[in-house]
Image (cartoon, rainbow, N blue to C red; front, side):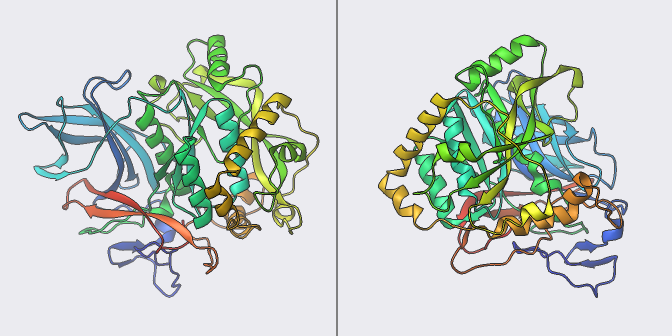
Length: 492
């Protein structure tokens, strides 16, 4: 199996012997979790500077990274950092925590330290060799007190689910921070309009590329959990940790309707008052299905809620945090959090709408993943339904949105492809007990076959990529100047 360094899916060549190295990439799938290399390659996803931070300290630096975790133990690895402000230079050691799973070679890591005031230049150092890396100033203001970090979207086409989430969040005082890898172009343009209206912030989520290497490495994108979703959640946390009162880590299909209060802020405050020493609020996810409209003209929030059906199944949930209590996170919570301070919210649950059904489609997802559904078992107040419906039509009647509505996909294409790929590689084994041959694979979609279409092209995130000089034990890679591209295609 050969993993190409470009943006397309990995190309397959079963004739390549295991252990082969091509363009620096090690082709050794059976030893992906045991083969040790001389250098651990690191992709620096983002770096933030905090003049002040409630949890990180004064003049703090936070490094959000993806690290090869097999060559040596990186659980509490340290990284040498050099900060400069034009008149003074300071060396410091950043200590790290990892947020990964043992079935993947690469893990998400966050390292932090303090440095000089008025930071102008940031470098990584090892044995006298240095490389300058880009950094951003952390946010100190937020659009709303509650930020909802949405996990990275790829080959995204389910605009109905987005409309449900964005209007629900807006109703209850939440602002969506959206990470995009790839998305059908008309859907992306719709999101851009919602961004202009102040409902959300769009952000890039990039594939990792090592532009230049002198030592071999395992391809990172196929060896990190769920497209580095933990890295996206950690990035969002690091961006807003000094700006927001609460940060939620949700998927697009995780939708929260507060049960007792009119806003998320009031609901979260009330839950936190029940356990003042809490580090997070943990919401279980109840499975739901709903019937989705084919077009925006047919879309009705009232009808969508009327079609919602609940399952008795409540899956592992997601957390809402006060950012001063969290510095890094995994997908569902931080592995380093004390479970006794994770406050379990008994009701409501997240409405997990993982099964959007077409009115007249085949809905093959229901044949593959069988689940029982009954009447809606969550609280959605009539007044909220009415106000969300009004809010939707206010946006829908904007001329630009009316024009975009004509070009949105009206039937599923990528959803069943990606779901079957997930089911075959992960979901079937985990949820339905399907017997699998061989060891657990690193869960991601990098080997999914994703056909390309002329009539529905994708916007894809891209950037300028750089690699630092050969350094030991870590060699660093990073990107700058991210942009949206129409030339890559619909890929993870």
